[in-house]
Image (cartoon, rainbow, N blue to C red; front, side, top):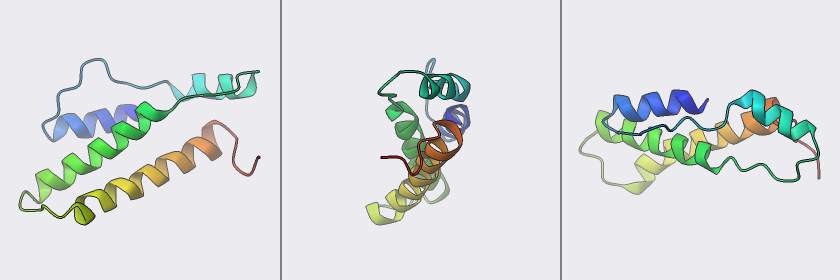
Length: 94
């Protein structure tokens, strides 16, 4: 998933060098092992940046943070739900 966000960021004018996040298969492997913490913050920052850049490019007149942060927050929720359910298998666990 992070690669898609990097593509969106670059499509809308961003310049990221070597930003790809951690491959989901590696996250799955780590989640099944004795690893206690897996940091996926970079993926979240990529998702937020991609959607903010997209809104700014498609609506350059937009300046209300509620209008450009809303889609970014929605994407962030979607991305974290995907990671928890489909990648880390941690949904519903305490």
